[in-house]
Image 1 (cartoon, rainbow, N blue to C red):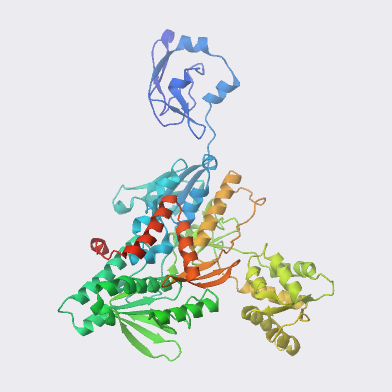
Image 2 (tube, one colour; image 1 turned 180 degrees about the vertical axis):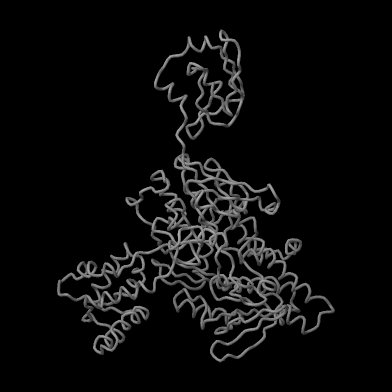
Length: 632
């Protein structure tokens, strides 16, 4: 007699052998035969129910079936044999994380596709956070509950979820060790989960670049708790400055706000803070307005360095109109309890900027779990110390196809275009003269960008207008670096380019090599993570993904840049979008609000965010410091 967790065998006399099907709700039906290997045809409607994954589970009843009645009712059939056999094992998939990449994967994976796998999501944060609106939450423009969505809303009907933190990935044994986050140090509170496929989407951590005092004295903005702390700190600064015993020096320090980092996050923090002061604090603390200063410190000579120069210049002018001070060409050397020490990168001059609150909004660092996984992978399979290197299908190199990596934690390997230079040149040389004119160069770069995405930016630098072509500065530098001192062509390329400018095969190969050398990983943005999660959902829905699966017939991941936006204050925004081009000002502000509202992952959140915009504009922000207990 074979017994298992779903069955209990009851022994009796040979003439009255019986089999007891014990109640065991939720477990799959396993193969079980009596001494003669009989299969029982029972009332399946009352005893067994088919689950969504094709297995069986017991309904909350028990039945005792006499052996003779079993033999009398036994009628062999293919269908009956299939019912009694063990269901086919489905791949065990473990997803680590609950951010953009992980939740995009789960959300876009259909229930039909999910039924092909046994999926478990593990994350210490049981909600998805819409990170682009954290600056708005920190200043009271939006409420925290408006930009979070429970993980269980996404996984319902598709996967299991455990609120736990992955402490270790055993690559060799294919299992993870996770602990409930509040008991991670307690013995016996951790558990192992085996996997066939592991999807790593744990994101990144903040990067202080080793700057002294940052961890101790700065505010950050990567989590909802960070937004709570910053919101409380701003309120605290104004309230402390308002008390009668506050000196002039204290008021100036308390109401000095410093933002470090001129990227989108830093710019939006400064802009939202300005709006809060101008629209609400001015009305509530009119006597303190002359003390308020908002300064943004940036190491480069302009903010929003990843955007085009027009946007950077507009942002600088908008900040100047708003009274936000840009401290450019300055690097933070140290952060003290009440001041920031900065050094001018050109002159070396040092200065101390006093602050009431300092926000560190620059840099990301590698998640410690990524380093542990890298150490466990075969030597030489990972050449990038900061990220898990993946192939074009987002499979981690050296993992044997068992690990995928999404979002900030991974770096997609892009194929080198210069290895195919001759083939591209022949295809682009439309008139067969052995030269590429600039129009031909533009066309072949555009066509080649479908296979080599790194060519896309250079293709767009070649812009046809009024029958002539111009070459953007970056492309000019690349080509001039190849040509050296070939005066005739250098002058033509760097001056007003004409249709007679030409590239030989050798020069074209050199150009592609320069482009390949400048290849960078995809930006660590929500847009990239969202697209990667959606891509992986399509892959998992197209075929049953297993280790060592051949994905060569499927398309690799291709990032499609849909544009960049940033809020710059006073209902103004900047937008750089491939189709619309550059959009600045109030119109871009409307687009920005519409995008951030529609970009929420649920209808509930879209409604809440829209109501928050309306509430803040009509009734003002709520400056109550109800989060002081959370600020620590």
